[in-house]
Amino acid sequence: MGMSPVPEPAPSDPVGGPVESLRRDAPALRGAGRKGPKRLPRRAAAGRRSFTATLRALDELAASGAKVAVRIDELDGGSEVLAGDDFLTLPVAGLGVVPLLVEVAAAFESGRLDPLEIVDRAVVPGAAHGGTWQHLKAPALPLIDLAMLAASTGDALAANALLHRAGLQSVRARIEQLGLRRTALLDRFRDDRGPDDAPHVALSTAREMAQVFAGLVNSSVVSPGVSAQVAEWLSLNHDLSLVASATGLDPFSHENDQHGLLFVNKTGRAAGVRAEAGVLGGPRAGVAYALIANFDDLSIAHRLRAHDAFRVLGVELMEYVY
Image (cartoon, rainbow, N blue to C red; front, side, top):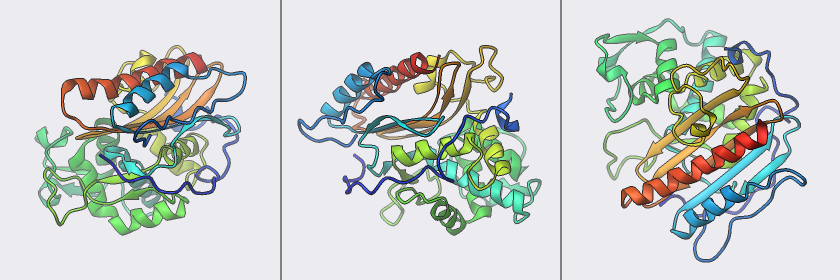
């Protein structure tokens, strides 16, 4: 499954410019594609942990026919820690909500959208496969609450409402403005995709998703205010079952960790698609990471093999930063 490999482009700076430092003072932050025998690139920073267990797990996943891409960057300076097929454009499912949230936050800041504008659920294109709004009695919510739901619970209906108000063309223009050459929000969330619909919600690369999260934490995405707002929404994410499972954080209350971990993430899930990108900071280091896996979801065993690779990465990330 997934997109065919495309030629690797020339390296580009992270979104909003080079990453310079780990911003702990931002208000929001207080609280590979492979076929056959080809192996994933093994590139790790000299003298640092080599992520050998992660590479082994990703190799095994790729050997089973999955397309896998991984990227880890240091937050302090933006140097590459690990990269494997990070230029491949692959389906990322709900991870594509991140540029939508950036556009919504930018529209709030500029006044193009009112955060307290009420959206009636009845006018929003339906999507019943994930989220909580469909189960609430409240038939209408303000845009800012919908952004929180889309970020924290992966609420597809809330994301559709945001896209309905922000506009797909505006989101695409924002993606271009951010310099994301291989990221695209293609469509809203749908319960069923017909032949006339886009085959996926969103596409991206591990490299660009890691850059976006580094930019958010370093306040370089659009503006410090927009970066802080989006990071605040994403810091409430409840899905800590993949890479984040190694952090030991409470899925429902982790924005102010007593052990000093800085953590912001977003996941994407669809049939045969698992993706996660985020930022993990500890006393030794801070990193931005992204892992995308497209696989044949033929059985529970196939799915668990993919999930295990994410969790192995999580363990080694914790060893790296803590």
